Image (cartoon, rainbow, N blue to C red):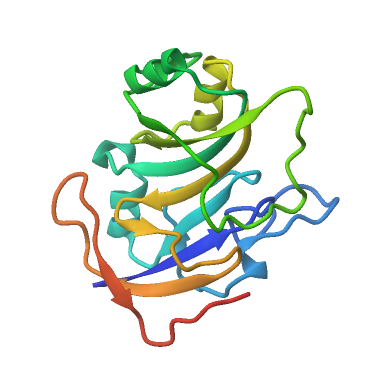
Length: 206
């Protein structure tokens, strides 16, 4: 058994407990939202991305979640500039060519703006003359800024990126900055994930 923390990481928060950059404008870190000695991030999330971030106190579980060889699906809500046509969707589904090589096939569909989505602070800048739209996009890789580069490759720049799901775990019930703790079993098969129940002392942190 292991403990897993599910955190809804807000926009412009580092996926670490300290800011290792030289002194300057202070950036928010995970320490502003929770105290978790002995826990490590399992699969990072960019500073300018939002959503589900997992932390665990178990090294093997961390590897099962974070290492791309286990092919755990990660699902994102992506607000893009422009409207995705069938050709763009098909390209993403097949795989697009990036500077570091072609991507694996992705699961992609057009969706309306997710129901109950919280406003971003600061809000997304929009161009009055260009429409925007939403995609649900799932990948099994973990390249640097991969989703943003994928949408850019089909001429749909990403405006807002929210990780909604990792394996069986989702953001459901968590507002930005809130978290919950689960007691879980390690994955028992390649590509699978552990299910969990709330751990003693689990709480939400506004």
